[in-house]
Length: 211
Image 1 (cartoon, rainbow, N blue to C red):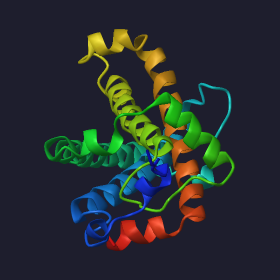
Image 2: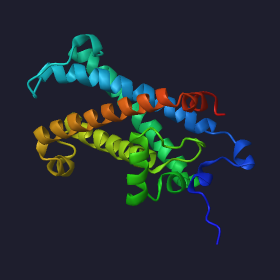
Image 3: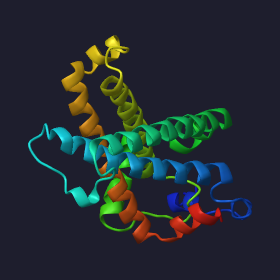
Image 4: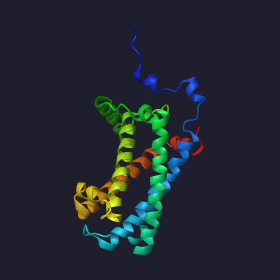
């Protein structure tokens, strides 16, 4: 029996080439999420500096808001944008079946294989319509991490109104640590994401113009 080459499944077919790489709704929600996340990180760093509960300060030049009150206003505005846009993104992915089709399954064996290929600079990016296992894991992580950011942020904002959630996160102080760690995880994802885009710049063009 003739064996098929696994890399053949990564190559786009003629039917795939006629379709947009990313539909308009995906591109819009992606860039709105990017704006919301950058605003949240910049203002969040300024809010953190007001307490410095971890014993260090973040350089003021890369924070947003100027003062604590201004940072809080930016943070809350970006929070609502992230929640509304994130829910829309998740809803469309669920209803269209894209969530299951694009992000699952994540095979541990394939994940290890793709990770080793990525470290050697040999991971295939022949068709940006289909995610490899490393991308799938990264995107699932950032969705869960964003949800954790929102939930821990609700405890910090309205601690009395969410007593059960507060207890699940280890109290108000515990929620502060969870929120900061989740934010750090998001920053790491962004850094890796930017590096990958720099290595494969056509993925940026696809997210800008769809094709």
